[in-house]
Image 1 (cartoon, rainbow, N blue to C red):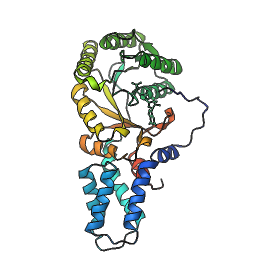
Image 2 (cartoon, protein in one colour; image 1 turned 180 degrees about the vertical axis):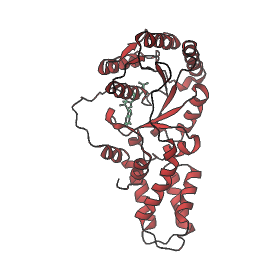
Image 3 (cartoon, rainbow, N blue to C red; image 1 turned 30 degrees about the horizontal axis):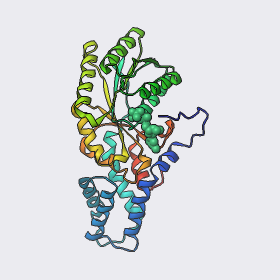
Image 4 (tube, helix red, strand yellow; image 1 turned 90 degrees about the horizontal axis):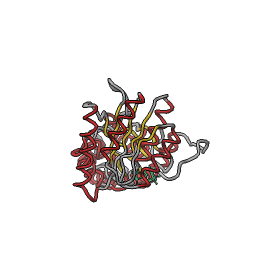
Length: 316
Ligand SMILES: Nc1nc2c(ncn2[C@@H]2O[C@H](COP(=O)(O)OP(=O)(O)OP(=O)(O)O)[C@@H](O)[C@H]2O)c(=O)[nH]1
């Protein structure tokens, strides 16, 4: 990311940041539910409209239908207030998200733990790497960053800034160099230094999919030469504002790089934050962190209950 906030910048609490970040999705869902259930009995028609509201927030057709059905169960022809509907919807969403809300755990039999970061350009990879490097530093871990997005000089520079800021060691080559070579050097350096974690950045030019695929596959192959168990985690960053396209990104990167977990950024930039629920329902991949704003503190651990309540506009 370009603007690195000062350490002493004000940091509103976790819940406040989350709800502020999810305002657009929350107001669309919350207003929709209020309008729908004020002075109307629950029947097939209202449930269909509820399903539409959920689909419009990108929760996915199947999940939306299931949630509407659960809301309707035993409540036909009864008065139901919007707050109760919000609670029911949140509980259903939480049930989908609970199994996949998993922190990224950096443990392995042998050091270093190798984390490969993948995702299209601009999806928040660099921000995520910075956040992870800072967290690991705070835990007293020794970190090496490998600047594997050799396609853009700016990507290498941004990573250097994060290395300086977090005290991590950086391994890079000149722009245009072989990405797999950088990954190989990074792992060699991390081993030589006895580092705990190696984080490898990669390029994300989806417009040239075949080339990207070949490059990522080569990176993985080269890492495995030094440690057959590596990479120990492959984390995909997704920009929530791309909507349904995020689903096809998950599919593409799963095929190529064997994604083990997700980070979803820019949930503050969309009224369709339900996409995270759709991805959870479809792929069941762990979600480690979510981004709800521009700052590094806006990238937060993902908590199922908090997210589920925040996106329908409920209090914590
Ligand atoms: N609003 C908002 N902006 C974000 C969020 N996460 C990242 N950004 C911004 O998105 C832009 C891209 O983030 P980067 O971390 O640089 O993404 P990247 O995938 O490394 O992108 P490249 O460096 O272009 O490859 C930056 O301007 C970030 O500040 C978020 O959760 N919300």
